[in-house]
Length: 95
Image 1 (tube, rainbow, N blue to C red):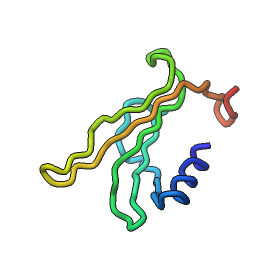
Image 2 (tube, helix red, strand yellow):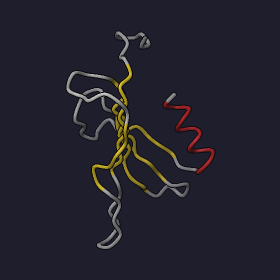
Image 3 (cartoon, rainbow, N blue to C red):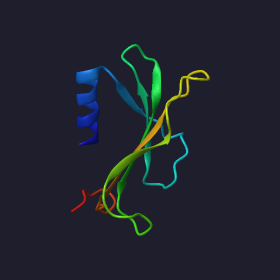
Image 4 (cartoon, rainbow, N blue to C red):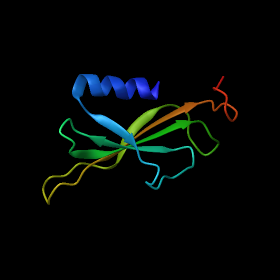
């Protein structure tokens, strides 16, 4: 589903999302992607935190760790999306 959503974003808006395993995250299940414009410019980072765990509240939401700002140069946003899907066992899909 993630790849399908990113492919849809590419087809509709021309943006690409590339995995960034080198970006620090707050939990091992969290994934990071770099977002680029159709011309290759860096637009920001997108974080996906998709699996339920005891330390997370229930539900789904999105927010930013840092807003975009153009007052003092180009500051790009850090956006995250949180969900609470059940995590499958290693190598298996969730329930």
